Image (cartoon, rainbow, N blue to C red):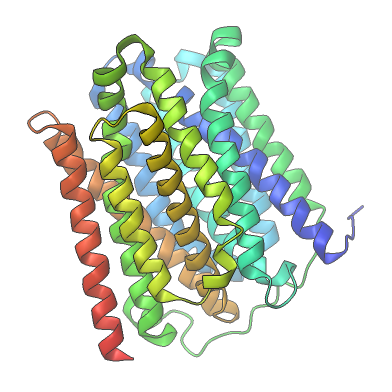
Length: 388
């Protein structure tokens, strides 16, 4: 029997479901990477699984709009969660006998499922909250996701040490199952007014949305490209500056970031429609990450990472809220295109950074990537001002 909840309760239930599945996702990022290396015993195998997951995410973002028109937002979210729960349960039961083929299948489902689910969640917020509450509601999602990042990362080593990879995968599967159950009990108006060209390519889609939206999507892709450098470089940097305490350093690094992301929700609604705030936030975030890799003392590092988290949370809320102003079917397709652009930026950044890190210092790589992201953001903002 379907549970009918008042609009505020429906959104609270969605936030709960998203937070629990996000916890499982970040637990999975650690556990699956370690498990893959254990099974394949090569960096090549780990790289292949990562590449498959990113490629599946790219395809999932492209196809999300069409899938939503066929199945609806809620049903698609439920099916994406159930598919991910199924493959993680299978991997837990098979263990190392799954081999590389099993890992590739898992990566395909996780990459596509996560991309589709993220598109559906972002696109559904305007239908679940009162008019004018998008930014505040997105702030709640960002806050709880930040907490899920820390909880997932922090609990991974304890869960794996206690029950092995099998327990970690079952916990991840349970998180997806919980999310699917909660979302399946919700109901809201999922009708999407059609647009004139439902199969329009990406450039036509961006033209229909307007130059301001096109700039936001392009800046977001550039930001993802820059972010790949600090995500890839952090373990190397942590090992160099903290040695045996590298895990503690990384936990403190991301915990400080999460504090900043948490505080962003209180300020972001004031800038929900500001492209300038989005571009400046992207620049401040990039500068903060570069400073974090210069080796500052702990108190200063904490302040820098709080600033990075605040800017990251602010830009995420402003960006998502702006795309949510686009009506109906066009909104869903825009979020699909956005997911594809962000995945492409992060994937290309990961490939380039992984090639550069063996030959160049960590600080140089992070600085170069984030400088490129800042220059791209400023150039696109300038183009946007001339077009509008």
